[in-house]
Image 1 (cartoon, rainbow, N blue to C red):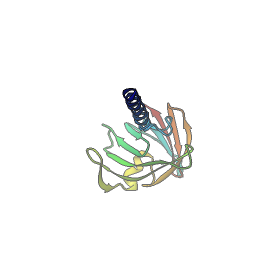
Image 2: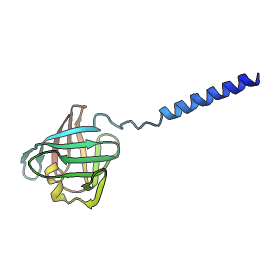
Image 3: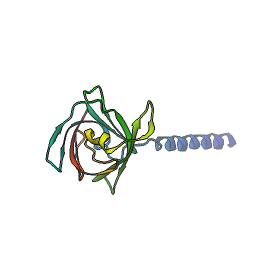
Image 4: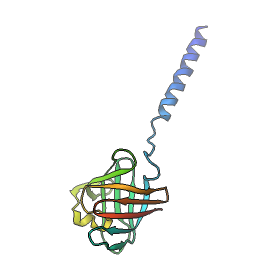
Amino acid sequence: MCKVKALAGRIGLIVVAAMLAAGCSKQPVDGDIEGFWRLERFVTHADGEVHQCERIFYGITRYVVEVAERQGPGGYGAFVGRFEYVGGSSRVAMKDFRHRASTSDSGRQATPEELGPFGLGATSTEFRVVVADGNRLVLESDYARLELVAF
C-alpha cells in the first residue's frame, strides 16, 4: 500500500511539474503586432511626403524592438529599443533605442536623426495601431504613419 501511495505521489508531482513547465513559455501579447516586418513606406505628417523604403526591417517582440537596414543602399545601421503596449493592443511605444552590437546593444544611444530613415521622429515614440492583421501593420504617431508588411 505504501508503494502505491509513493508511486501516486510521484506521478502527481510529475504532472504538476509538466503543467508548470508548459505555462512558462512566453506567448506574444498580440500575435498580429509582434513578428518580423518590412517597412514599405512612411508618410511624415509635417510635409505629407511619402518615403519609400528599401530593405528596412522591424523585429517586434514582447519587450524588444529592433529596426535595421539589411544590405540596403542607405547604410542606416541597426538599433535595438524597448517595446511595450500602452493600455492594451491599440497603442504601442518604442523607446530607448541604442546602436546594435553583435548580440545586444552597444550602450551608445541613437539620435533622432539616425532613427529618421525608419519613420521614427524621436528616440521615444508612441503609436496608435491603425491596422494589425498579421499580414499588414500600420502604426501612426504624431510624426509619421508607418506601413509595414509581414515577411
